[in-house]
Length: 223
Image (cartoon, rainbow, N blue to C red; front, side, top):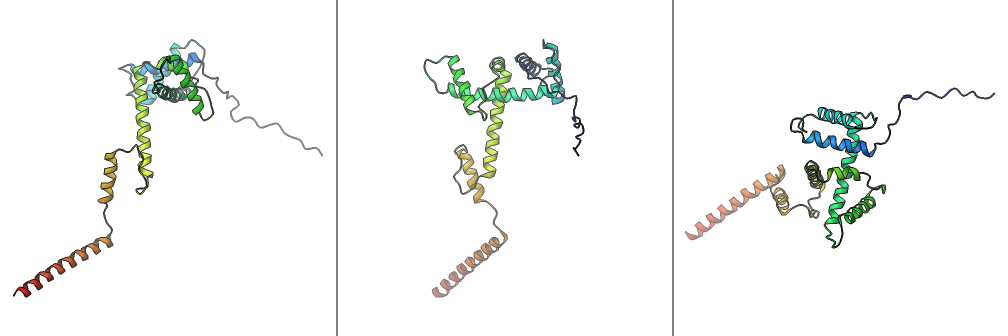
């Protein structure tokens, strides 16, 4: 007897449709929203994130010229991707500029930074947010954000190094001389155990007894 196959089970989310990729225009409006809301002294970043991103979402829908219906979460996740990739590209460009190659134009440096970005990407993906970088690169708010991200990265590296380092191993070069001296001082002043403390106390008493005995013997011999 042939086995009868019933109808396929309905999808758990039958009405769910994957949203379309962000267009360059949507990205640029989102970047403008982040810049404008952050720079507004009345509604700046000091407020809670929920309210902050609600305002950015309002700005996005007021200024877009397409029919997109992006949610707050969608905009937040897109901004995280933009921020991460643009910050990484800025790092690549900085490294290219530090080479101080004579005769190279800014266009040449950007092209080299794009090549460096792709070569270091885990999946060899090209930098796809040039339109966002062009809007952000000269903005004080973005430049401050780049500094903030760099400081956070350095701090995380130092914390990770200090928590996993073996005291007997060679210390990383990024730890300064002051930090090395501090580590050495802590090693020297570490509290000793109870048994060692008792042994040290007995040794000290023994030294005092020996000293007193030598003094007594010396006095008797003098007499």
